[in-house]
Length: 161
Image (cartoon, rainbow, N blue to C red; front, side, top):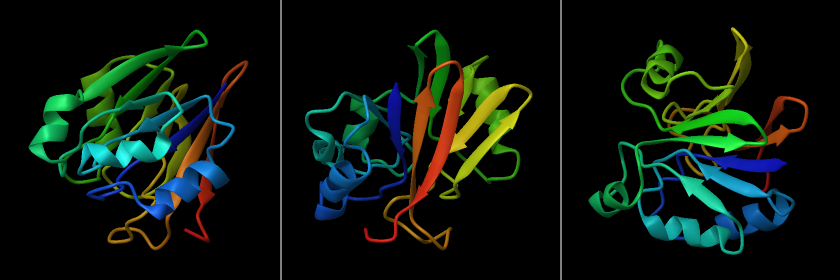
């Protein structure tokens, strides 16, 4: 199973960058995860034709916060994948989020705009960074998770988006 992962788009509508992202990077994805801070629910229109799971973030409009949950735990190929945005200062964020979401095999989160792909205590902590915003990171990135006989993550730098 291949899962495209995106977060912190900070857009008010679907735009050409997201349409290209689907075509160029997520075309083989079985599922798309958005880890919050879409800003507007219309951003998810970019992924039409794909199954999408998303959570709201701290910068989302009230309409998004009413439409999307704050956290999800998904059972994917017998692995538990937690999806949550995050809040507050980035220092210690992974511990805070793990307490909020519970025991999972992989924790997908956003908020920091900094890509993370690291295993700690048997849990894959995965933050795709931001595909469209560079306020807190010098590069735009997304992620790809692959689930087979384990969960493996890859951070993809977007050079042409």
